[in-house]
Length: 73
Image 1 (cartoon, rainbow, N blue to C red):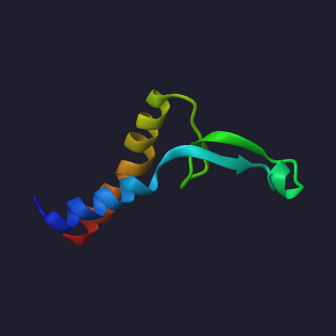
Image 2 (image 1 turned 60 degrees about the vertical axis):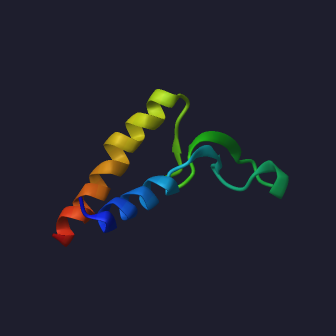
């Protein structure tokens, strides 16, 4: 296994954290009417369950990682 590809894949996966982000404008704290929602902070995709998060990684993130890795070879 190419260690560079593995390291790049690990780094990309670590960008996709399951946390919270503000949707639809500024947060109320900043004078807006945006709401805080759970989801992938990197993609700003709403995610409510662990299963949805794993599906997001498998269906949305992993294909891009593999495409980049295969394009290098």
